[in-house]
Structures are given as structure tokens and as C-alpha cells.
Amino acid sequence: MKIAPVAEVKARFSAYLKRCADGPVIITRNGRPTAVLIAVPDEEDLERIILAHTPKFRQLLQSARERIEETGGMEHDEFWASVEEEGKQPSND
Image (cartoon, rainbow, N blue to C red; front, side, top):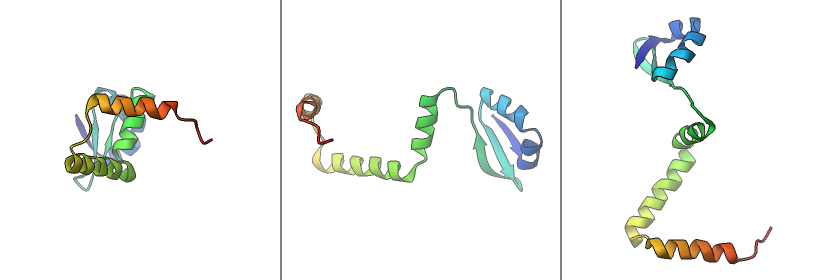
């Protein structure tokens, strides 16, 4: 992991893009961490990164966790049976 001030990253951005392939680059402003430059190996990773930092998606996950804690969730077989049943229903498109 590399730590660099924003002015240096700005001046040598291409070099830091290459460097982040080896690990995250922490970018600082006035000595304080302000951003992270990370490599995105493929589109799936990009999707995961974006979703992980999307407040609406995080809220959806939290809501699901709370429902599972309250209700105990559902058994594996029951889940897949409901997915299969939903797949059999005609689409409203």
C-alpha cells in the first residue's frame, strides 16, 4: 500500500494508476487520508465496488438482515422452492 499527497498523485496520475495494480494508493490532503485509488480487474469487481458504496443498496442489505433476525429467515430448500415457483408464474411485462 502506498500513501501519497494529492498534489503528487495529480502530477503523476498515470504512474499512480499503474501503481494501484499492486495495491491501494491512499491519497492524502493536508496529511489526512481523503481517497483511495484501487485497481478494477474486471467489470464484476467494479460492480461490487460500486454497490458496496451505494447507500440505497447498503440500506436494502441492512433491512434484509433485520428481517432475517426478526423472522429467522427461511430454510435453504424453502428458498429454492419459492424461486422455482416464482419462475413458473407468468410475467406481467
